[in-house]
Amino acid sequence: MIELFHCISARSFRPLWLLEELGMPYALRMLPFPPRVHQREFLALNPLGTVPLMLDGATRMTESAAMCQYLAARYSPGQLDVAVHEPAYGDYLNLLHFGEATLTFPQTLVLRYTHFEPEGKKQPQVAQDYARWFLARLRTLEPRLAESAFLCAGRFTAADVSVGYALLLAQHLGLSEQFTPKVAAYWASLQQRPGYQRAQDAQWQAARDQGLPALAAPDVRP
Image (tube, rainbow, N blue to C red; front, side):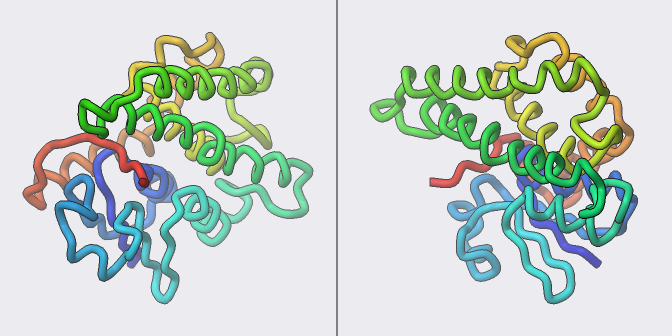
């Protein structure tokens, strides 16, 4: 059975959401945020001290977008992935990694310099600059979403999960009010998916069952 180590609303929500979309059994291991500080023994499993960590037999992964690609290709070929022979394959890979490398990265800097640095080291201007950076790149999805309910291949794929997490993080940061109309409608539709709702329920139920304080804070790598 797949094991997923997770903090509430962290990047590990991506593979959690995808596992729920797939309907696969998994074990969800909840950690306090940030685990590298509050659960030092986790470093023995993942020296980075970050989530996600996903174990699937001998396979060990620490990158959330890569997990989405892996799970979709291995466990739902032709459904939540886009196969190599499909015309949209390159588009799919680009959007899947766009969700992390282009959309999530700037938001981690907003988090860091508005929430996680001590008062003397917070940088409001840096946070504002990276928030604008994120929103400018997010707007590039507007024409695409005007033509389709999903990002690529005419169907819901792991790319939607990857980008969808970036939209969830933006909502936590108070940036969702600045979404363009099609992006806002897309985000609203993703939140209505049963897989997304099950993933939300699963993380909170697991936190309660495992005695974790109800703290929602996405992980930020130093």
